[in-house]
Length: 399
Image 1 (cartoon, helix red, strand yellow):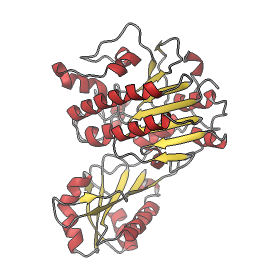
Image 2 (spheres, helix red, strand yellow):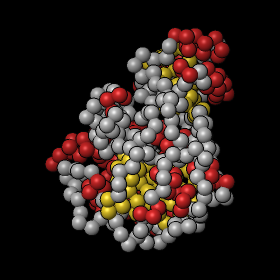
Image 3 (cartoon, one colour):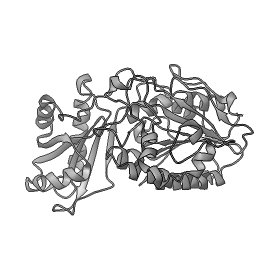
Image 4 (cartoon, one colour):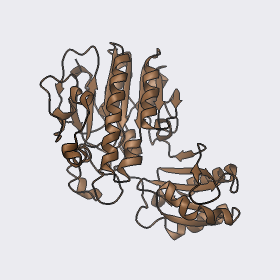
């Protein structure tokens, strides 16, 4: 064992440039981080701690210059799996190569056959059935759902592979909402309708402008399709601490402890607190606001500000890390806020590694899979990786 604790933080969707096959996924000239920097232009981009780690050495940025002596190792990673979504990216980090992508229904909503079956089996009339933001769909349709006294239910999707059902807690009821979502999960196990997650979206309020989603959200996600690095770490009696939506992404598989975050800043605050206490193993963190608040909503200014907020918290985390800790920063896909539409973008992602004990730093060879992360973590703890895991360890390069 080289490091006693490893903190792997996913800046959800912070891609660093198009993959060679991006056009097969409907993307062209996409570059999440690069285009955010170009958008900021002369307004500046304050990320001194990421700069010290070597981010600007890895990715050319308008305002942030490469430095002569970065303190981290860095490289670009390519995605081996067939997809560009959250689950595919995270699963590949932990060894799973996904060959059959999850289905999205962003353009036209769910097919009539799926909606008909959902209505028949739940006993509710579906309204909505389109891609929308959670707040917009409530303002548009919640009053209609409430007026139906629970006979109607709001079904919608997004750029992700999700089927979401809204239910007013006072009128529709939580138990009924969860029951309908379980039915939807069974229906969407069919290959042609296979979505990554069915999400219960409860809310409160009586009229437009007052509706608020509650914390009783529940995700019915697909279980990982194979054993992951997380399973192997847990079986070896190591700690596997999940922060943010990591627990949902892996449906609790291989997780020993979980922390729900209310924002990306909150997720970093939780990680900093975790770092102040003893554990042995992996702290796996997802910071979703980059993606959910700014990427999908095509807001490059908000995205840039979120990265700057992260940079501040990054320094706070580094201060409380031990000499035998390792920090890995990465992303799960791209979501270029300057691109057309609202979908994720097929991009390379950064791999940045740092430890207080490192004596060297610099550029590493580009990888052909995100699975390098899980393989490196398993190697560090002397744990045999999952039998079918993709990836290879680069632990020996992190000196």
